[in-house]
Image (cartoon, rainbow, N blue to C red; front, side):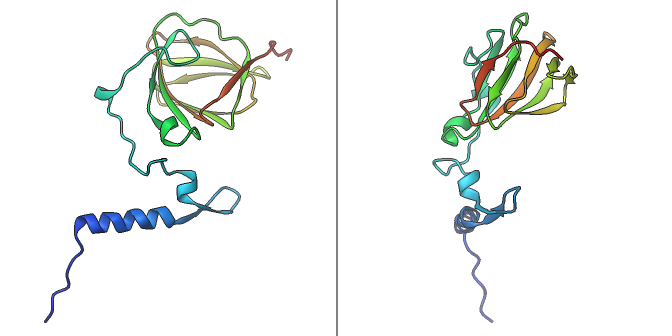
Length: 169
């Protein structure tokens, strides 16, 4: 009886990667989209960043945060950005503003932040809370804890911020 030869682990990995690159998926409209058009990194490599290898610095729009760049922006050619924000000082008034983007997503890792939205809605996001803010939604950060940390994901990576007058309602 002949034994079936098992493919090597490397051959299996390469075959699975090729299948993943050519696999089709559906976007929220039901259109077929290629996975590598929407989620693959530019150099087709796994993006991993361990905390021990990461650095925090003043690389974001708020002076009272240190930011950690996760490398997602470079890996996706600017389609997405993911940064960890860590409070370093007393929060300054951000003022009313909106972002020029498709989406801003925030996941609170530690502490809390208070946000006010056009129309009067106020939300306190505490550890474990998440928030998706569509582009153009007027809001204002009005308070945060001294230990506030959050992951912010934006699409596209080059998210603009536009200051506006306080809403009348």
